[in-house]
Amino acid sequence: ADAEEVQVGRKNAELQAVAGGIHDELAIGKRLGQGAFGSVFLARRELSGSECKIAGDDVAVKVVSMRKTDGALLDGGRQRAFDKEVAALCLLQTSPHIVTFLGFSLEGALGYIVMERCSRSLLASLLALEDLREETMKLVFTDMLCALVACHAAGVG
Image (cartoon, rainbow, N blue to C red; front, side):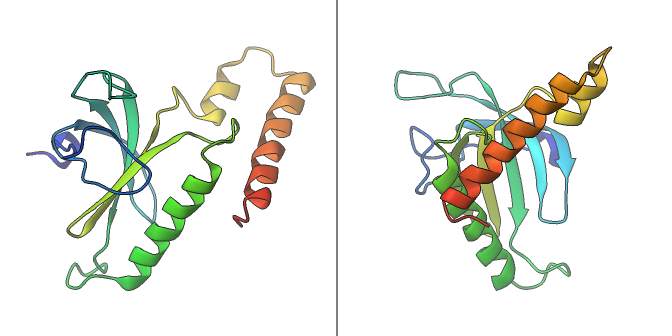
């Protein structure tokens, strides 16, 4: 199967910020982006029911390999970085200026971070505007500074 269309889900009934697998609950689709730490994929919640907070909604799933770049051994540094990112997202989940953290899972040599999916990037949103005004940029920078304040207030830095 193509890596961008791998079926992924979770064993537990709802996403939590504490633990659990993601098999059987999420279907991972196309890649949205890739960075040095992992790739982000579009995913859709497969199960429905009153216990599912985001049933049917699209989410973003960051997939991180815990293996060294040669693929041979598990990399403790990558595991620590993953743990640090999850801890930071847990601390910031109440901020309206930070993308909503929905849960995480560690399965074998892969780590998954499930987040709210944004409809488009900030850059794409700004480029779509016909007339970019100073007032708009003031709002953008104010929101960015509020996110930074939330990070500092939570001890994330």
